[in-house]
Length: 114
Image (cartoon, rainbow, N blue to C red; front, side, top):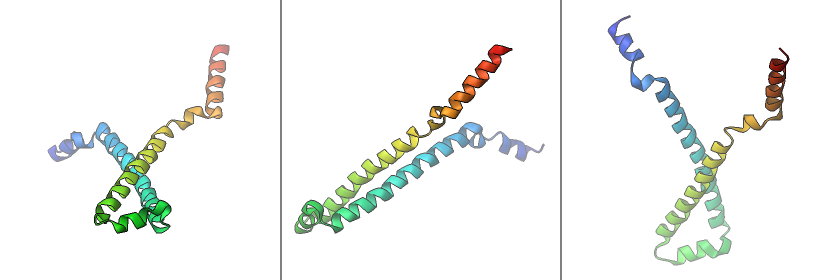
């Protein structure tokens, strides 16, 4: 094995832990982006339909850009956090599956019979 190939193989940036860390970060960014998209849609609909007179109040103010920024920032944080939380909570869903529990019970019963 040449020195260059050995260096690539032993590179800590290509280790199993580094690959797993990258996949976790990708998972988090992806789910936060889904929430961010939902926040944009929801915020645009709230402003378009002028729910609670929010758009009218914002446009009557001289600080309308700051108001709109704060509205969308708050929505992004909220929707992104909810989306990320749902993604994390659904990671372990396979263990709640009855077929998985039945398979464990069947394997345990087969082991006890031997």
